[in-house]
Every structure is written in structure tokens, then in C-alpha cells.
Image (cartoon, rainbow, N blue to C red; front, side, top):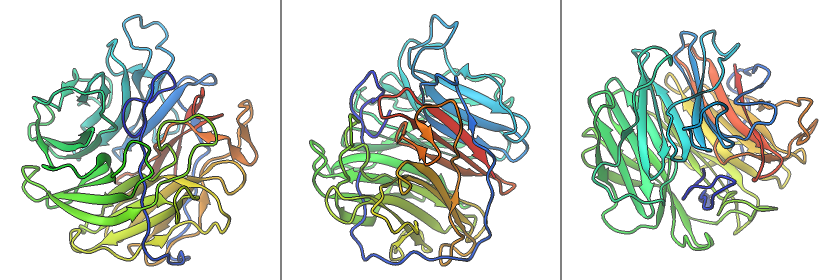
Length: 432
């Protein structure tokens, strides 16, 4: 799925939003050391694939969890949906993975996964199941999973839901999601057994789409959102905001990161609505510093750039934006990810087509983004896939990239590659 209503090749919809009209600053260089990545591993059901929009998490003890939607039915599972959520688990730090296993046997379509691990090693996943947003968890390193629990309790069901954000700290589980123009965060304080949703925006501020949600070391919750003010054709001004809660999700304040942003370009071929528009990602480090990155063009429907902002005062103020890519061509930079560790340790990733095809790129900083490492290309050529050349892959398959930093400092990255939006394509995993 994508930004908005369910958007697999068999369904319609899809939303990604715009961001970015502040002063353009030159991207910085040098700073953190260069990180090397493993050869990307094709996940799901290769080579035919049709695996879409993955998510990843690791406990730092060797257990790595990759979740994705398989769009062609699960072999041998008559009760599974044609669009089913599957999990693959590694117990050796990502060197090898088990076969994909359905998270639930259910005929309803399933999209937009997230996965997080708490300090005790309990694994939580969120995703869309039919018209609901649900959470499952595992206490045995992914061997078994609880039944899905709906987080949108008491809310009128709607097909106009999109990728939920997931944050976990101890027994506190938070899920951010939208239903059309309404934005919600559902909170659980019993380890995901029950949820209470709260609507954040009491008035219409535009079509709201979640970019991610995090919890800092003091329990303060932050969620990034994109706001589309003219959602019919996605050609109006768009904003990136952060919502903040200091009372475990009971009440929320809205903080502006960037506003009045130009819409993104149209797809070269068939795509979901606003597929190459701007989306955001958010991270918080152990000192409480916030990091938001997002992609947006300089002019309406222009080539998107990757932008970065930080806040050291809980979102009250934000740094001027900087451009993360050193690419000087008029390339399209899309689908950002960000992760953070100790104070000032921030990692970012995105896709761009500077080579004439798409690749995944990565940078890191040890000082909160004042200086940056050189760019590292994460994606690599592999034979046997017609849409992959030495220049890169033809098109992103799904409109999300997930970047995670585990407790040992290893980066986990997953993304989708394909011939076009329709596919079929594949999901890939790499680690530092």
C-alpha cells in the first residue's frame, strides 16, 4: 500500500506528500566514518517476487525481523489473502533468514507493515488488515505470534486508511494512523493487549498521512505527518508537521516542521496518487534530539530533493533545512528513512536516480547533522532480474524505505525494487 487508500497493483489509491520550500543550504560533507553494507539479500519469494514495502527491526542479539506484503497469495495457504503479511526471521544477525511465514491466516487484504522490538526483546508489528489497523506481538523471537488486535477501537471503519506508524517502549505501544483527514494515535499500556485511540486534529487541516512515530527516553512521544491541503489532485500546498504528547498519548500538540511545500512530480508511467510526492521520516536519539528528513521539489512538480532538519528543544524550534544528497544532477530523490542512536548519532537513507536508474544511498553523522559522512551506495547489481542493470534498478517497488539502528550500532535497511509501479518486484535487505 502507499500513502492513502490501499494501493497494491490490484487496488487503487496511494499517497505520498510534499515538503520543502525553506532556504536551500549546501549539503555538508565529512564528519562521521563511512559504513560498509552487506550484499543485498532478496527477501520474500524470489525470483518472481511480488513482495511489497518491507519493514525491519533488530534486537542487537542476532535476531532480525523483516516484514512485507506478498501480493500473489501464499503458497499452500488457502485461507490467506492474495495480499498477505509475511515475516522472515534471522537468528544470526542477518546472515541468513528463514522462509516467509504468514503473520495471520485471514482473507482480508494486508498492507503497510511496521516492526519494532522493545528492550526485553518482545517484537511488535502493526499493519492494515482489511479496514482495521492491527498489532501483533511475539515473545519467543518470532516463533509464534499473538492474534491481531485492532487499535482503531470505536472508530467508524474506513478504507481511507494508510500506513500506520509504530513506536514501542517497554509495555507502552503507540500506533499512529489516519482515516482520511483525521489523524489518530492509539495507545496501549499493557503490552499491546488493548488500545485506546485519540483523535489529534479536532478541525480539518488537510489530508493527514503518518511518516513515523518515536518515543524518547523520558516517554515523550513524537509523530511526523504530511498534510495535503488539496488532496483531490495533490497539486496544492503541503506541510510537514510533528505532533507531541507528554502524557503518554492522552493529549497532543501540533508543531510545524515545514509548510507551504510544492507538490511532487507525476510518475513516468502508471502509479498511485502522488506516488513521487514527499514523505517524511522521524527519529529521536538517546539525548532527546529530534531528526526529520523528507523529500520535496523546489518548484511545483519538479525533481524532489532530500531535506533534513533537527530540533534540540522538543520540537519547539527547528534548524534550517539542509540538503542531504551531494548529487548535483536534476535527479529525483525519494523515499527517505532516518534512525538515531546515542546523542548526535543519526543515520539517513533515500533512493535517487542520478545514474539513470534508482539506487539506495546512505549517510551518517556523529554530531547531529553538522557534518556528514560520504555517501554510500547500499543497493547493488544482481544478475537474473531484468529490471536491474549496472546503473541500478528501474523503479521503486512500493513507496517506503525502512532504516533501523540496533542497540549494537548495526544499521538494518530494507527496500523494494521493480520494473515499474505495477511490478512484480522484490524486497531487499542489507546490514552494516
